Amino acid sequence: MEMIGHGGKPLVEQVITDKDQARKVIKDLKTMPVSRQMATEAIGIAYGFFSPIEGFMKKADVEATCKKMELADGTVWSIPIVYDISDQEIADYKIQQGDKILLTYDGNPLAIFDIEEIYTYDKEGMAQDVYGTKEEKHPGVKRTYAYKDKFLGGKITLVNEPKIREPFTSYFLTPRQHRELFTKKGWQRIVAHQTRNVPHSGHEWLMKHAYIAAHGDLPVEQQETLEGRAISGVLVNCIVGEKRTGDYIDEAIVLCQDELRKSGYFRNDIHMVTMTFWDMRYAGPREAVHHAIIRTNLGLTHHMFGRDHAGVGTYYHSYQAHHLLMSIPKEKLNITPIYVLEWAYCPHCGEVTCVGLCGHHKELQKFSGTKIRSIIMDEVKPTRLIFRPEVFDVVMECSKKYGFGSPFVTTQYLEQAKPAFSIEPL
Amino acid sequence: MAETFPINIWINEERFNALKNAGLADLLKEELAGMKVLIVPCTASQRDKILELYPMAKFDAATTKSIELLPKAVKDQIYNLVVEKKSMEVMDEFIKSVAKS
Image 1 (cartoon, rainbow over the protein chains, first blue to last red):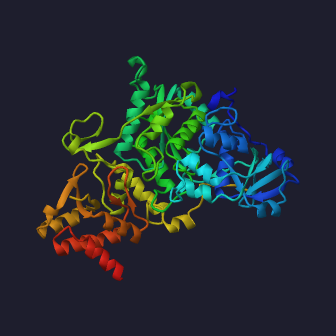
Image 2 (image 1 turned 45 degrees about the vertical axis):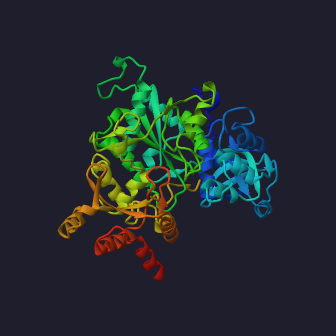
Image 3 (image 1 turned 120 degrees about the vertical axis):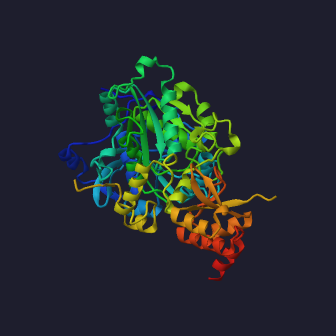
């Protein structure tokens, strides 16, 4: 059955699953090794996470993305997906327009790249358009300035599917697999929670808020009270990608999010955790649009957006992402945003509450993810109203098992942790 | 009064008892459903100096306006100074001591 993705277009699936056929089509192709980032983006393109994009962008799409926040054909698109390359590499690998190149990762075949265009682009202009700043201290701008001088555009076809390592194996689903699982579960409404964090109670309540909001117009008879009969759910889709020191390690993020369900803070049949490979750009509002696009492709109907979605520092206003999403005509984004205020602890109420509901404004205690990370770094166990004890135990287990003694990314983790996926010999 | 930017030093039970026995429990605040915290204030220039000395630390400009993610060993030194001086105004001395070493 044809699946429809972002922009009302068929979900992209460019994967050769038959190994014999794959070996045949790559025979005699020129090869070029790719970095982890390019490998994950090639994988993302081929499985359709970035539908309707079929490959690394050509100049017309990059230009339209930067200037108008859409693809050349008018489909909403907010972040350029580009393959950068130096003149030296073009010469070394003898790359010409019209070539078919075999991209390799870890020395093994990964994907065929049809080189449809070789072009240049003004990186400073790209940074300004996408991130709203040219300051190199913005991590997305820094990444843009680090691009090499040329770009390759063209279609990607995966010839060798990634092997996902434990503990991530069961959490990686392609867009098709997400949709098949939702059908099996009988979920008709699914709300996304975008995360790169271990959950504290503020996150938990954001998810609960979004779940309830996504149901608001349904008859109560359809809001099933019996476990196993839910018609809607929360999908926690963890972003797994480039890490910076001080971030939570990916293993802790995925396993701790799942612990909320395992420990009963969410019912088994309404909560699910998966992951998507993506290097955060911290593009704030534009990244929020990108997240909405990815989750549309996963088959979700709703997406929760909170305060400072995908922002960094003080580059964006707290709710700038909401305003950008609101400016997009509904028919151009096939997912319903759910805008939520933050949740905080109120000592007067003795509970975690929505800052938009509680009247004890001066008493509210905000607990940012950064603050909670500081508590854990101080080796102090947070109170259960703030951070679920079962989640804390999983954080500590992950620290020992995967983090070389720390639940946070350290230099040792960056140097020695195994990537979440590998490409095996074909 | 000029705005200050806190360093939060979270206190476990063992340290809480030690502070109580030393008569310093009044220095603590209670936050987040019963957690004990020493809130050590920094001026804007002290904050900038700390962020320069410890690049892994982060100023949470968006939510709490506090300096977070300082290594535990650093916070331990600040904690020890607070206990020794029986005062929260220790950041100048702390920065000087780090700059010397």
